[in-house]
Length: 477
Image (cartoon, rainbow, N blue to C red; front, side, top):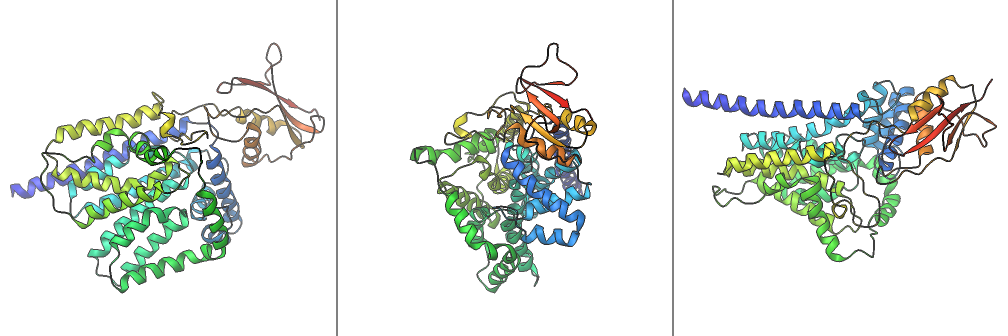
């Protein structure tokens, strides 16, 4: 009786810890998103533009929108991520994608990944399942990417799903289990081509050596064929362009970049230390899940190392395997107090980056002379005056918009396009789509950057993060 009561208490404690982690993760994420108005990174804006096409199509013809989401022409990447975002955007009624109702969809992807971590370990290591899934939600890479429209967030969830599927298929005695695993693989491949880097090792290790493996691969091939088959030539060219790195970067920089980026940026030092062996830990026999996680982590890191072009965000799909290992490791660790301190350090590191208390060294953010992309940063309330222009456009007579002296955006603030690039989408998404005027005389709405009138008028707008002024001029009817 006492044993059953203790077991029930442990079960309640595990579920409560995960539930608390989920609630805090959502509250912090929703608060951050509602506080941030900074226009999007250039890569992010590209994915939003693709999602906008799906959104517009879905509003006009939902069936055609589905076709676009699985086999549409939406740029270099497969269409599933912008398809999902586009349909959600359409359900939210269109408008500005920066609205909380639209942007917060990205908070869901880590929750899916955490569920897959839980389901993978809940039978073999219930406590490890709770630890791994709860801490996963607080790694820097996960928290940062959950706030932006980038496919890596959904890719993390899909890779976690494949790892669960490989573990589940070993236990499931169902005729349809290969179809489920094949569908999970197809989802990853339809999110991003680079998913093969994270799936190759786990599939070679974890697929059964019988006809079920063929059924898995055939299912995946059938599902991805509508998009991949017509794009084979384009994908070969894209792949060749993607492997071109900076020839001036030393071999040691290439070798050390991803490990350093993982420890400091994507995973954080507190969680990274949890992977180290504990001298006092109990000996553990290798399980399928433990070996699968090590294979997924090691093979993915190794294959990424061979790709010359390097981005820290490419490490994100390795995190489900890392937190599977952390959950499994917890079961055998004797020094629980040390682990508690490491957990606090891990969460604190993420919180510090999120609040802007410190930034990472450039050496772990970018490998060459490009501007670093910072996905985990403090929220910025400055929208560069775009909302003021949208409000003025409502009052302006019909006609074009002219921009004079628009500034470039410094990469210390954001890696994105010049200011005037963001104006057109902002007006269009607010229902104020206007053509570009060739001169200030032919425009009904003009934006002139430079020194304000003295004293500044009600039409003068100061942009704090750029340290610049612009004036809004409306043509009289």
